[in-house]
Image: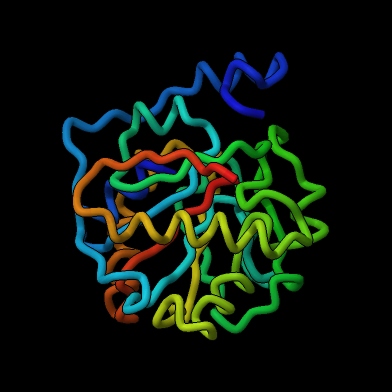
Length: 77
Length: 153
């Protein structure tokens, strides 16, 4: 996932992403990433919980407003 | 699940041994503020419309997901057994937040949603996806996309 971010950004497309495995993201160092404490297969949290999904999505998208990076933030409820 | 160390074996050892690409620098493309941004989603869950070819082992290409698609109409051909599939089966937004993104645009939190979204097969080495990703950047710019959100599975 983070590798795609590098290639897209080099072509001029801004990216933000969700990270499920923090250790991998720390190695790849994409420009903007939000680590979430959810199990693999559930990057937005829980099914049929739109409020949680929205909080995760907004937290990841807000990283687009960061002044500089790489940014790796933790999602905190 | 909190960290890699919390994942049960044998999955933990498998994931810990995965080779991650390393980059000397981190590129930085500017995005407008979220309220002014037109966004597309890129998933690595190997999802696609049912009429498209399935992803195979080491597939490095991507599938186009039309912006107006109903999430419940998408299928998944990702090959990995290492992630939960029950959440996706119940609610596509747990891996592909299309309804949530559309709601943010309707509410004025973001400016717009791309005409299309995209999916890769996440089990493929990302270095093999480089050319396809650079090609995809052209499509995104042609759709006036300001930024993408990358969602793993």
